[in-house]
Length: 155
Image (cartoon, rainbow, N blue to C red):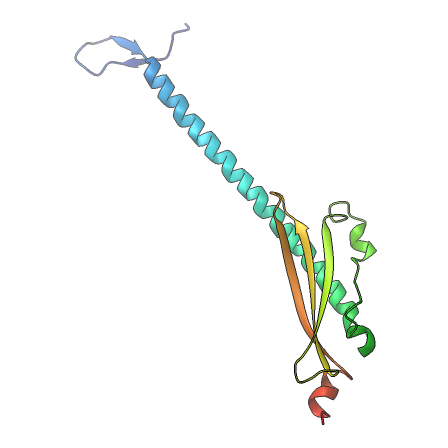
């Protein structure tokens, strides 16, 4: 018994039925289309946020690794503004990282402490899911002879 979708008439006619009108079907389709496009937009935004979170973690790992390497430098290498760090090969083996992330370093002498203290800033940049360029930076201070020497034996 295949019958089209029918609604019972609410007015006094008993047993009378009517089908959905074209306007009612069009409104239902319009509401469904609105719900569908909104959910797709929300999903795209969620993918962007997941990509950003994943890349922030990768950038943080790259920066932490390089920062630990720099802590082992002697004064002449740490204060060398021409030193250009490279992302370690252990990160570059991953095709999702290779070619997308860049690492840079800036060294600034601290005023009044020239030759004794520098500020080192490491920055990782990458292109996000939607094409924007994002970055994450770590900054540290490095003193000649080490921090303990600087704090307790300064002249």
